[in-house]
Length: 257
Image (tube, rainbow, N blue to C red; front, side, top):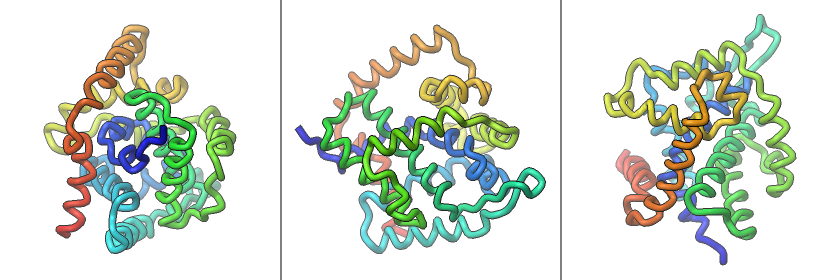
């Protein structure tokens, strides 16, 4: 049975993987150094997060005008993000196609993991439709369509060797620390950070979890498994307007702007 792929992207529970996706992104120096030098994510975490998910929802569900608006906004933010690091030996740019490919790949892989934990594995046709939908997050910007791996098998060939080879440098660790322990932001966000850190730790590969200094033990693992099983029982039974609230909220703000 083919599932409604449009509903998949609107599920608010996917946002539970935001921490994982962000930490994977900055683990890539081509992304992490740009964030360190040019982003205000650490000082305005909620504003930057909202801007990011508004872009994602607009590309997936917005009108042509809304897509054009968020595309202009993202490109404006990305314009200054270029430079060199490591004494000039390594360059970075937000318009680099390989960096954009990595960012979209982290969003896709994280969404699949979260959806699988809550709803179970997708059937083959739905999984492939979802995969192709995620390509739009990059191709709306500068990612050449041909650079996105053509199918999920090709994606796995691209993804897993790069994931295993990630090594955190000092910049990534510092940025990750700032994001995991934000000094500013709404009170509710700072109060929720212990839960966010716990969920993020449970979703990260072991070597990156250790690298970012996130505590983990057998007790953590059992509690994480219990949390995901409980979420899988409760979340799908919530009303649709609750599950899709984040999407509706972001698009509503975009229409009003």
